[in-house]
Each structure stands twice: as C-alpha cells, then as structure tokens.
Amino acid sequence: MIKGTRVVTFLLSGFLFLSLGQGALAQYGQYGAYGPYGQGGQSNSILVDKTVGMNQVTTKGGTTSTTFVDNLGSTDQRFFAGQTVSFKIKVKNTSDHKLSNIVVKDTLPTSLEAVDVKNYDSATRTITLSDNLALNAGEEYIYTLNTKVVSQEKLPTDKGVFCVYNKAVASNSMVSDDDAAQFCIEKKVLGVKSQPNAGPEYGLGLLALQMLGLGSGTYLKRRVK
Image (cartoon, rainbow, N blue to C red; front, top):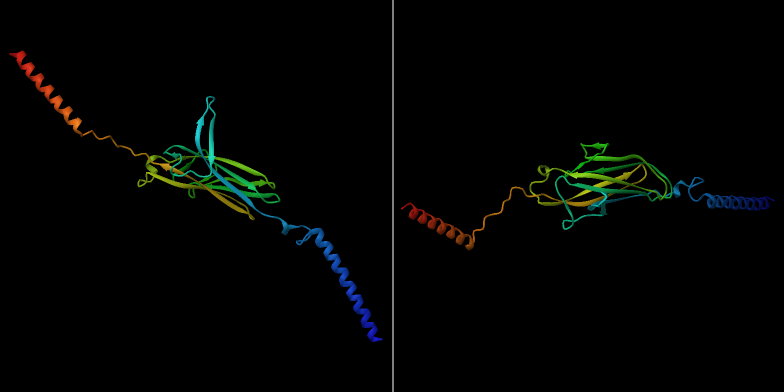
C-alpha cells in the first residue's frame, strides 16, 4: 500500500512539473528572456559624424555654398588667421527606441575661437550645443558650427603649416559617441622682402649708369667753358 502511494505521488509531481514548465515557456515566448517589459532586449547606441567645410563659393545671388568632408590634410585647402572654419555635427539615434536627455558638446582647439555661440565655457574651450536633445529610433539632428582661426600673433611661432582636430561628443546616461575632423592652418610669413638681384646683369647696369653720369659731367664742363 505504501509502495502504491509513492508511485501515485511521483506521477502527480511529474505532471505538475510539466504543467509549470509549459506555462513558463509560454511566458518566455510572449515577453522574451527579459520579462514582460522587454527592457533587456533594447539596443542603446548613438552615432556622431563630424565634417569640416571647404571650398566656400558665393553665387551671384549672394548664397554661399560649402562642401563638407571628413578631414582636410596638409595638401588640401588650408586656413589662415581670421578665416572662418565651418563644421557640421550629425547626431543619429541608432537604437531601436527613443533616446532622451542627450548632451552634445564641441571642444575647440587653441587655434580656433567661437563665433556667435551662447553656451561657451572659455576655461575648457567647450561649446554646449544641446543639453536635452531627444531623438526617436533612427532619427538624426544636424548642427552647423562656425568658428574662426585666431589672429596671427596667437598662432604658434615655430610652425608654418600645422594640422589640428576639432572634436564633438554626444552622450546621455546610457550611450556615448564622439568624432573629430582634421583641418590645417598656414601661418603667413610677414616682413620678408625680395632681395635685389646681384647677378652680372646688375653689374652691367651700374656700369652703364656710371658711364652715363661721366658723359653728362663732361658735357656740362664743355658748356661752361
């Protein structure tokens, strides 16, 4: 009798285990591995793409057209003291859900100064482009930033041509990304004058002038007599 009771109890336990297991599998298939809210299944990612402007062309109507590229090397277009350098900063939500409270900042190198910006920290040379950006999944926002090369006397004294980077960062509590664009600055050399030509032609010219002066003196003496 006791043996039969054990068998019945074992069968009931097995039935309950299978029933609970099927219920758990059904719940897994409905909500996924991370529960009914699916929080663990979300992807959190953001993309920053920064470009620098070149070949600024003004049309007859007064419209300025600028081509933006990833980087400019030393053999590409160079910038001079006081010249405007423009950037575009694209921030894209590459997650599968909305991202909020995104902070977008740009840090200037010492050779650039900010132009017509509000949120600029001169101590860190950082411009805050946004402190509360919200982007839906797949949405992007593009900032245009104008800067200016510092004056001639503020540029390095030991460099004629040098290249620098300008970096932008976008982040919130879950994601972060950054990108930088390179451009080059050429410092004009001031106070250099062309040297006089000291070749043989120069010597012949002096000799001709001397002979002309000698002849003029002789002619004047004859007139006086």
